[in-house]
Image (cartoon, rainbow, N blue to C red; front, side, top):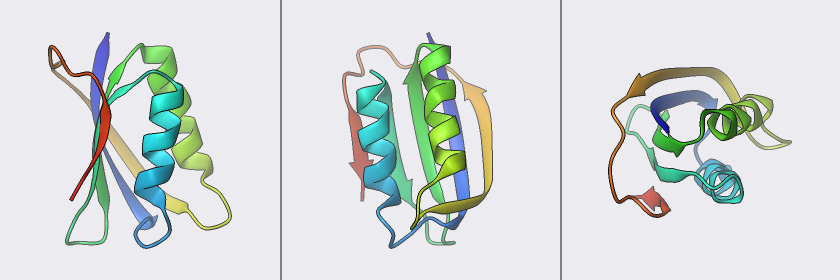
Length: 90
């Protein structure tokens, strides 16, 4: 079990990015959250099996016709016990 903090920059606000991340994370069995930041970036914390986290990060880097993360940084952090869902924070 691993947990990562991630921050995405680029065309990531106003294009459904948080829902995109939440949907992909849930399909991969991950927990955590995703949130828009005032500087135009989007931050997230993602927890689960490392191979599934890597799968999510690949999807984020690929984006889609609306989403384009021009920069995506990650850092491993401590896991959180008893987290059971992947939420969008407002």
